[in-house]
Amino acid sequence: MTPLLFADITVFVLSLLVGFEVISKVPATLHTPLMSGANAIHGVVIVGVMLIAANTTTPVGYGLLLLAAAFAAMNVAGGYIVTDRMLAMFKARPAEQGVRS
Image 1 (cartoon, helix red, strand yellow):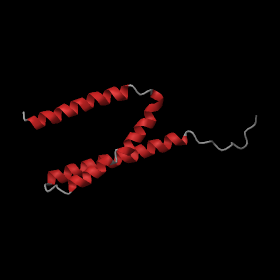
Image 2 (tube, one colour; image 1 turned 120 degrees about the horizontal axis):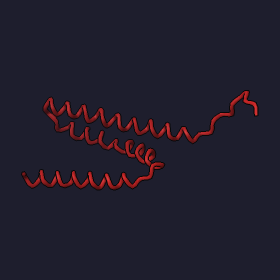
Image 3 (cartoon, one colour; image 1 turned 180 degrees about the horizontal axis):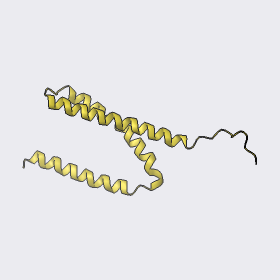
Image 4 (cartoon, one colour; image 1 turned 30 degrees about the vertical axis):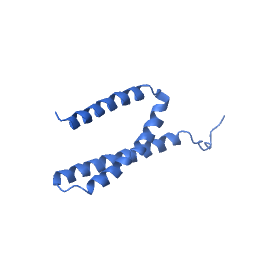
């Protein structure tokens, strides 16, 4: 195993452990707002796709870029949709007409 591969695997495993610890401490009432914001922030992945696309020359590379761009776009759009639905829950409802008290 090369030292660079070992370092990459170490960083990946440590990020998994830290991510699990951070997310497991989030109360249920804050989970949806936190995740919708995190999904929207993941638009950085789209920037990464564009940067890597400049250096890709193989069909497999283009296929992986397409897959990464599609997942990143779905993640960003999903984050905004969840946030919109969440904020809609806090809007005042119009007064219902014809309701007797």
